[in-house]
Length: 135
Image (cartoon, rainbow, N blue to C red; front, side, top):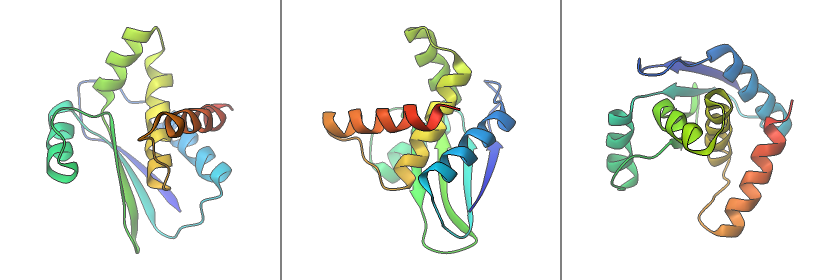
């Protein structure tokens, strides 16, 4: 599987090269063997709210949305809201770049079938994120 990162927003800087390395490392560690391209697209808050409402039937902003497709050439899409990462990082004393990397990995895990609806699932997913984010 190849990963394509695209920045479609202008509000926040996005370190595409670093995030591409993070995503590629996570794909290797998860041993994902899928044909096609996984698109990771960085979008503004307004676009993310629209996608969240239209496809997930949720109101408001979310930070990451993943879509998995059956077939080639596109295996799926992960949409990330950098402004949400910036706000969360500031509120919790984290670096923006690290939080943005976590969002990419989080989206990848959702794409791979992991869920975080329950507290136990959230803890498992957080541990897996931590492991995948460790160089």
